Length: 271
Length: 271
Image 1: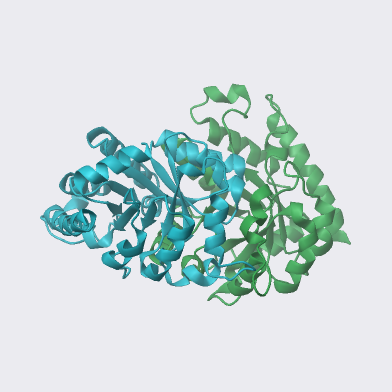
Image 2 (image 1 turned 60 degrees about the horizontal axis):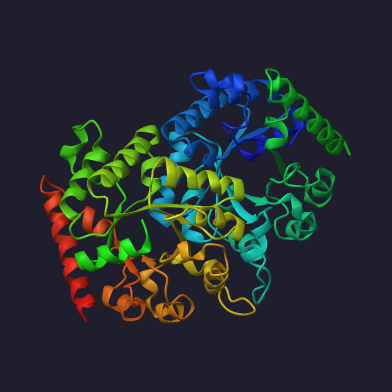
């Protein structure tokens, strides 16, 4: 998917909502556990109920790998289901990969070719040649971790170098890499005071913002500095939407939460 | 596996060789491609031929994920085969994972419980709470990226902070984490001039050293500063061993390469 197609979808749906499909079998409605593939069945119903309010889905690969082959099959079925039924949706493999060159190429093949995701999240620790193999894929997006929303996020990302904090060095350096126009950046929403400074470095790139809801971030605060002329934000919510209900009406409950966020977003976009 | 069991194995085999199982279908002998599971068949023959000279095997997950479900099944069969037939071997899932707390727990379950690896490699970029969920597993080892052997390794790892380079901050900070005795560190072999300084910070931990052979590192140089009283090194070779031959005798060729390295290691250990 191209950046322009994503922007078109945002304008059409008046939404920049990404829904995180972090499926934990101990948290999904009990009645689904008798299904042949409870994880996929859960995802399918969540997707069917929320796709009109969301522009992206983001399965976190950890939740699938934890269930071994069955988990990986559920991930494959989920991405195929989205691609077949809702091809306008931007898909994110939240995998946080990154390795030396030839190995990163294998990861890129896994997510961009074998599974056919539009994008994958990548960790920057190993530097240029660990990220550039992902960037080489046309019409695919590499979403680089910059500033994350967890408690330990600043342990190393926040270290002050001779010039500035590590996460700013990551942003600036990444812009010099080949095909850097294929980048987005992960910026945690619990750090809204940083968005203004980040936008000075990357005014035009999309930012994927986890941490709304369960992790404590606030939508208005993030948008104040994070929005750009293209919108430029994908705001993720996982648990707040997918676990809104625990009964047979879980998908309707999820739909209502997605709708609430979409309406808030529509209002922000109309300004 | 405990650290002491690994040390015992090193003393018994007079080897600290780790073999990287980075299986690429375009590089394995052609006659294996007609097998039902060429990746597993390749691994099985390599393992059978080399286990007496190696103390650890390290499949890199990227190479398995790139083949989707079939790849993941080959990975599962490979780890099961090692655990059943050579339980003394230390197994490393070279996965370079790392995510926020609850997600890292899912990755830890995937590799430590579902697949039953002894260890997994983890990237430090997201800080303490992205690594501690791995460290919480008893008799399992978390191998943290410190200094990597690739060209871009120093892009961020080598940034000078107010105190010292980022990779040294990673080493020092990691030592303060809960269950830090369950850590090993990845230190690239093309950077042998750094081993002396690294040993000042982590004198007692094992270091996993990729980059011997194809990536240009030298065994003697690494050992000069890297060895400690327990040996404290696992030296990885992947392509140099597993792709030593391309014909029906590929496993014998791999065995010879492994034996060569083991003999060099035995000599070093005897000093």
